Image (tube, rainbow, N blue to C red; front, side):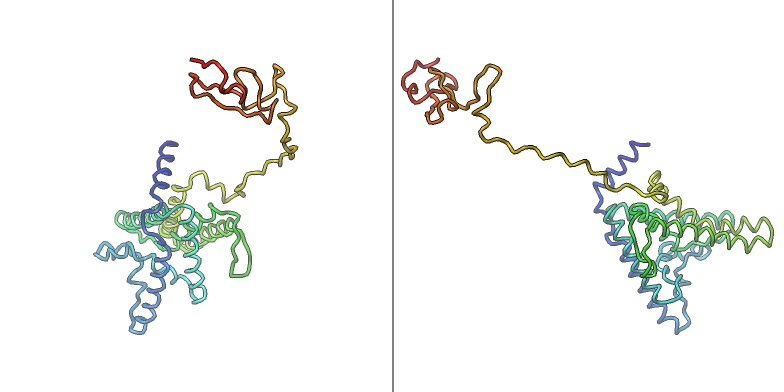
Length: 306
C-alpha cells in the first residue's frame, strides 16, 4: 500500500501540469454566467437552476447533462448577492491554493472524483431503492474546503470580511453545521416512523458522506492536521559559536609530525622549499620522467631522472 501511494504521488508530481488549469476559476465564472442567465430567463418564467440541478429521474429519462451541470448552481444556495460574490471569490481562492500546492492534475482528479462518486451514488440509489438523493455542489465544495484546511490549518481568513479565524476551525465548524443540518432533516421525518428516519438519513446524508469519502481517499492519515496544529517549520538549530578568523600566516608556525614545514614546491636536489626560501624560484623539468621540481640553481644543473 505504501509503494502504491508513493508511485501515485510520483506520477502526480511528474504530470502536475496536466489537466484543466484554473478549474475552479472556470466553474466560478460558469456559476456567474448561469446566475445572470437565470435572472434574464426568470422574467419569462423559466427556472434555469431547475434545468441544471441533479435529478436522477430526469437523468434516466435522457437529461444526462445534469450529471455535470449541477456544480454551476452553487451560488443559488445563497439568498443575497453579496454572499454570492463572496462565495465565488472564496471558491476561486480555494482553487488557487490547491493548484499551487498540488498541481493541476491532482486538483482535477480530486474534483472530478468527488463529482463522479456523487453521480454514481445518486443514480444507483434511485434505480435500486427509489430514493431521490439530495446531490448538491455544496458538498463537493465542502470537500475542497476541508482539503485547503488540511494543507494550511493555521492560515487565518476573515470571516464575513471582519473576524480573523483559522482555517482549521472554519473546517470543523463547517462539518458541525453539515451534521446538524442532516440531524434536523432527519428529525422532521422521525415523527412518521422508524422507516422514514432511514429514508431521510440516506436522502440527506449520502452526499455529505460521499464528499467525506473523497476527502479521505486523498488525505488518509493527514486528516489529523484538522485536529491539531501542524509543525510547518522545523525548530531552528542553535546558532554555532563564531570561530576565530583563520591566521593567514599559519604555515610559518606549522610543523608536521616529522617536523617539516608545509610547502608547495621543493627542490629534488637540495631539498629547499618555497616555505624556507620564499624568494627562491622553482621550475619543473620537462626532460625528467615524472613530475620533479628543482630550484633555480639546479633546474639546469641536475641529472635527469629516467
